[in-house]
Length: 197
Ligand code: SF4
Image 1 (cartoon, rainbow, N blue to C red):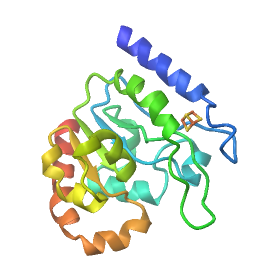
Image 2: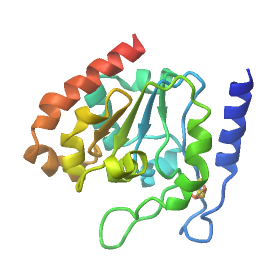
Image 3: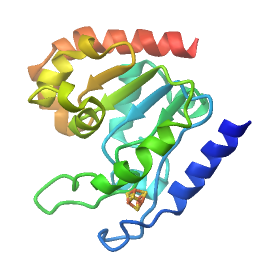
Image 4: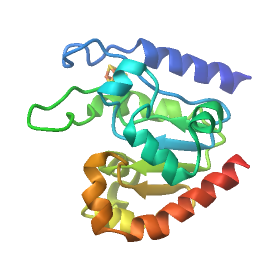
């Protein structure tokens, strides 16, 4: 009961957070979705504009590809409390005129990541989606590039699984690195199935 109340308190504090208000071009809208039952946590970069509008993580084409990789449908993804989503930053950082979104503000992980993770006692697997999540979680254990870190995925098991971001921007990366969908995705799908069975 204490852990449940505590998680509620951390989530309430996160949803009320406006720490980046003076740096964002819009009102902060923290998006995070975790539960006391969460066992598989998806740790991406930061919400994009579509998620900023919906307030629900991965309601976009990246989410469609991620769900396909995991082998879960839309209803399961949002209906099973054993799945959680907590990106490196909870607010949309804005669109960079040079392309893509701005990086997640580091302040968010500094403020919230440890208190939030401390309230998830049933965690079994964290998906480190993209280089920001990998750098934070792996520290010196991350390789020199995201590709090398993902290629070394077996080093980080059983609790951490580095992955590329499922964004369409990584479609060329996926074509260049077919081993990811041949080897890592089947493992991800099986771990997801075992956690959700
Ligand atoms: S990105 Fe994180 S630290 Fe910044 S306002 Fe949003 S919740 Fe707060």
